[in-house]
Amino acid sequence: MATTTPLTPPDQHREPPPRLGGALWWALCATAALGLAACSSLGPHRVWGAAAALGYLAAALLTARGRSPRIAGAVALAGAVPLPLLWLLAVDLAQLEVRVVARSAGLLLAEGTPYLQHPVVPEDFNPYLPGMAVFGLPEALAGPGPFTDPRLWMGAAFLGALAFALPAGDRSAPLRWIAACPLVALPLAVGGVDLPVAGLMCLGLALAGRGREGAAGLALGAAAALKWTAWPAIPVAVALLAAASRSTSAGRPADGGEGRGDSRRPADRREALGGSRRPADRAAARCGLVALLTAAALVLPAALRDPGAFRAHVVDFPLGLTDVVSSAASPLPGHLLATHVPGGRTLALLLLGVSALLVALSLLLRPPATASDAAARLALGLLLAIAFMPASRFGYLVHPLVLAVWAAARQTPGHPLLVRVGKQVSR
Image (cartoon, rainbow, N blue to C red; front, side, top):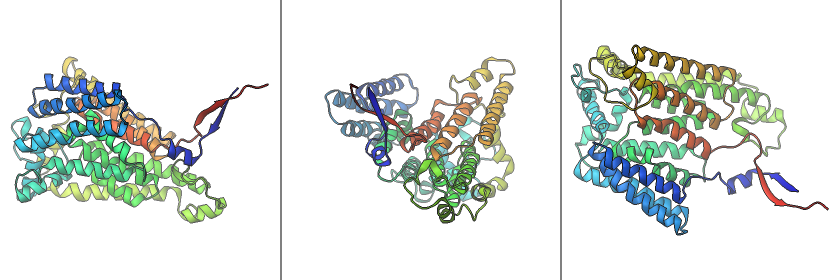
């Protein structure tokens, strides 16, 4: 008769959830990189594809020969990020977003706004919120160079925020895997504005899950000042804090049982955690208020400097409401509807609104109980938004990917995991 026993918290730390890293995975990554190198018309993408394919193939061979996943992952990471990044920096090649960020920082210093008044071609548009210009300030102040390149600062912000968002003592393995994943390694090397946004969202949810609502609001407000895609993270964090505060007030430990093993009486725990002194909604309101004030402080000065340019760049252009069409195009439902169906743009925007409403209702009816649940809910909402946006790219999928992997890396199950420990024959 097979028996099962629940994992105790120490067991959970010794046996983390399995992660992708086998020979088949690295072979699939190599195939994707080679396909991009062969099919892309963008020079930086071709360079990345060729270099990353070598790293992934070497990792697949090492794994097939029985080398440790750590060594194989390090080889894959070296081929997918540092090797192409150093080459692209040496020849001064980057994705268009890098040049847009650098230009926006120069405009911000010179004119007080990161937006051109009269954009003519798609390259003139800056669809990011004013906070994104921060990553271009080193180049604007010190001049172009390998150490002032905006992609270095965006990558550093992403990795730093994600590291602080991961549980202490279990950061290196998830970071290596996420950084080596093609969808993340590509923007790390060629430049990607979505990475710091994703990292700050994870950090904000992690801080909210720890009950640090003020710090969570600062992180989420900073993310919201970079790009519109970060704004859905604020109501998700607010719902998480409201649910966690109510659980604490009821005498249950917040954030998925991190308080297991606390021998104090429920009343003592409530007093220590502040549950009996603070209404359930106060922490959530404080997080939301801090996030909104932080975003407003970073966005409004530049937006009010030239409201017309702000709207044209960050509202009309991403929604396809300008005469100049965005180059963002992937065969996702929203783009296909907007391109091939009469009235499809309106239909795509309607579906986008309906999906946002459904996610909002889910937060009200069944708020997330842990930071991992909140990340999964946010990942789903962003996935729906990416699918129905009229102008979207596959690269935007880095948001739900990072959130989902981060949630899996820090998951503390609400129910004990069952592990087969042996078989006994009943006599």
